[in-house]
Amino acid sequence: MDIIATDFKATWKKTRYVFQDINQDLAQPTKEWLDTLTEKQILAVIVWHFRRDHFSEGSWIADSGADGHMAVLVDALLGRCERQGLIMKTKTIETDGIKYIEPVPGATSEWYYGMDYEHGDLYEAEELFKDGHVVKGRKLCLVHFPNGEVFFPVPKTEGHYSEKPIFFDGGIYMLDVDFPNGVIRIVRFDSSDHQVSIHTELPLSSVKDCYNLQLRISPLTLSRQSGNELDIVWPEKVSLSMEDHDSFFLRDGEKLFFNRWFEEGEDVDYKYWEETIVRDLNGNVIEIFPGDVMQMPNGEMWYLK
Image (cartoon, rainbow, N blue to C red):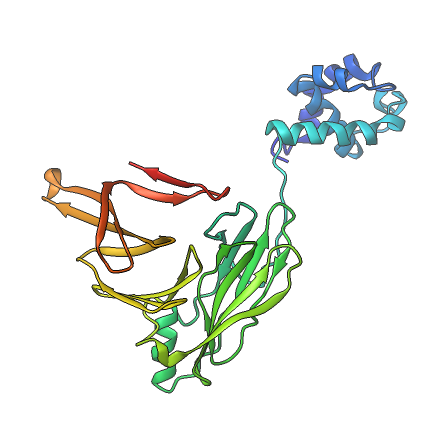
């Protein structure tokens, strides 16, 4: 706990008289009384409770009579300290070696994901497989907030590779590309009962390659982008051309959203900016505006102009 100094005897010396002042109220602590305690008084109680073994027997502490009330009191104080940011609550999350997690894209604030990158991205793993190398698979974990529960919905399997998941309609969807059998599986992890199912299967031959093969929403869409070409592979098949520096990132029904970046000048005259391009499924531009679009955890679309 950051609030407790490493030199506990010195800390106690500074706080013992503060503790003496409040000791008389420990027998019948009330919520109202707890709320009146200062940070110094909270520190005194916690230090005394957790580190009293550092102090000599025979001091006034041993005769204070406070032991019988301390457990309940300290639990209440620790809860208050955590809420007010006076101490930091920590958890150890066992992710089987995955050291970084980030939010699952989509309308959720409860789920995070992490992956290993032993073979790089999906298209790099595909190239390795085509060149005759062994693709060991990819480890992907889902972590639930706030309890820290960890799930591995797509087991790491030789010859298979996955990509980052996306949240849609109560489930977390992810790709499981099976190179030896030439299959693209879209796997669904139910966010409520944690059951895993195969949502749909597609032949790997339905895509030119796995370059930027990703799931988007909404509806749930499998797309592939390479250069100035965008292919929507599923649930319908659409191909359209884009301009330089365009990246498809979001779908809203019949509307496709693209990010486009610009740069000009050098040194002090250098400028960089971005625009959002909205197209229909035929590739026609509907709207162009500066800024970005984000889907928030409650499902709302925020236009940042």
